[in-house]
Length: 157
Image 1 (tube, rainbow, N blue to C red):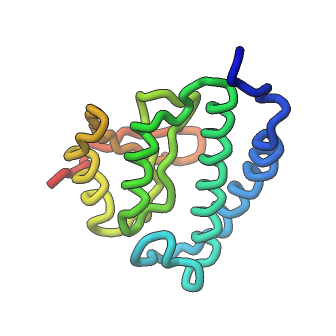
Image 2 (tube, rainbow, N blue to C red):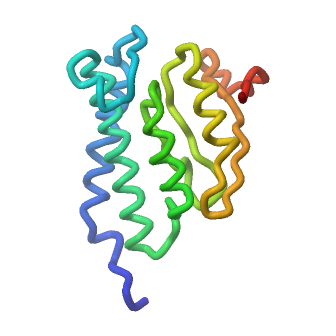
Image 3 (tube, rainbow, N blue to C red):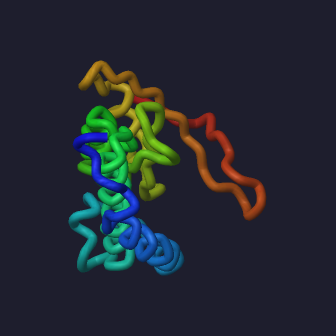
């Protein structure tokens, strides 16, 4: 179709191919103590966590470019605005549109530190840009083989 490029000829495929194993390695090397401040402030104090943040942002950028090239809203403007606002909160490592994208979900990776989850919940529950309504659903990884578990203790102030 006119105005769309061939997504198979775009560099984001190579970028994603290179980023995915890097993200796995960075998860394995990430510092286990809890930094304060936003991800942009972790470069010297928590370099692996900072690199994980950058790699996840690069992945997000490549996925968005892939969708734009294919004419598919993998990360629509409504979700870009919410993800960008979420990234400004202290303790947030990444905010990304999961799966195939498109208007229905935003995943947030954050530091499990007092107040971080509450701040995310407050932002999301008060979000009103682009006629978007957000309902937080907290999940966490369970032991190997158990998948994700729904958490019932997500508090919003």
